[in-house]
Amino acid sequence: MSDILQKLKEIADGKVDAFLLVVQEDGVSLPQLIPIDEMDQIDHKELSDLRYPLVKIVEEIQERFPNARIGLLVRGCEYRALIELSKYSQINLDKLVLVGRACERNTVEKCACLYPYPYGLENVVGEENPGIEADPKLVEIEGLDVSEKLRYWASQFEKCIKCYGCRNICPLCYCKECSLENPGLVVPGEVPPTLPAFHFLRALDMAGRCVECGLCEEVCPAGIPLRSLYRALNKIMEDQFGYKPGHNLDERSPFIFLGETSDVEHLI
Image (cartoon, rainbow, N blue to C red):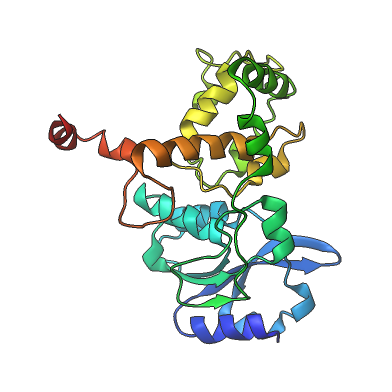
């Protein structure tokens, strides 16, 4: 068994029922829920480096089997997603055993990730790599004047085929009724969707929640720079409210804070 899998088993021994891992079989990487007593059967070459929306699978497992004890190997963005989801009562962290996975340098650079390391976890496999200080694409966009920005984003949104891939893969999209399917807001069957309703609605939903995993951009068949769009929103959230999604388990989103009458009265 590989060093990583051996460490997982040692950490999780007696604490979990199964590990949720992405493994490779016959050249195809897929998620598998592996009972702890079968970990020895997973060969090193079968553990995949593919980024996969495991957090969404964990949500589904906990919804169906709330008492299941699951072990998870998480990157920095996945850990942030779990933290943020726990604030909205969508994940029970007490039923999870988390082992951090440091992203390799090529992954850090591909994602232009500022926080690639799962800070806050006691057990982490891999070496820490420094984050990228600025998203090159966002720097380029922010260098445009207002009219140029509007034209740029309009040209990007016009490529949208409304496949809902960005929503479906996002770990923080958990609403049972989605505003993007509300016929009063987004016209059904219209492709590309009427500008700017579809993407503005999703962007507003991501404000204060996006953990910058970038999976939305990776699955977008139109190549829309969604990661940069939501990072721009995160920058506003940090500048205006001092809030960074997924970085502090005890710190609530300002949108939750403003939704409580007593807190609003405190601000007045």
